[in-house]
Image 1 (cartoon, rainbow, N blue to C red):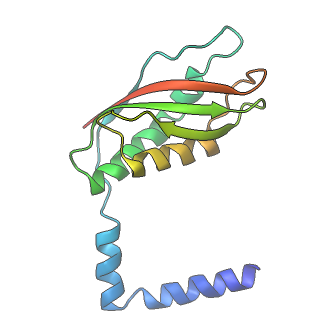
Image 2 (spheres, helix red, strand yellow):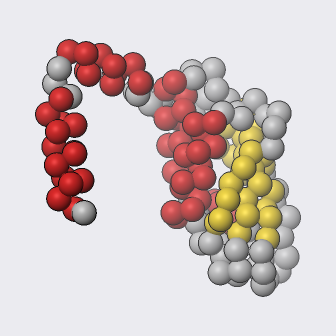
Length: 139
């Protein structure tokens, strides 16, 4: 299976230099913004299950997600409350945003979901757990 993927990647790369592909790719992926900050609010936990440190541990990646999303939506900022489902092993199964926050942006939430699934290791909650994590993004 590795050979077809390499072939597909090579053909996609070969077609990139065309004028149509370049202008299309440029408009689809605007450059990320820079700066900004992310604050992690209070997150309820127990002495054996403190969910805040794993989120604090990926703050730089969350800020990268925010700046990437601001490239497409420069006005993006504000509060985003996440519902993070953590399995019995401490791995993130699902991330959703509560509706209504100013920073409720589909691209931002998808990026944060990817970051948390790949890089956040929560303590083992002793079963499934849903963590409510308030975040505030500032420009």
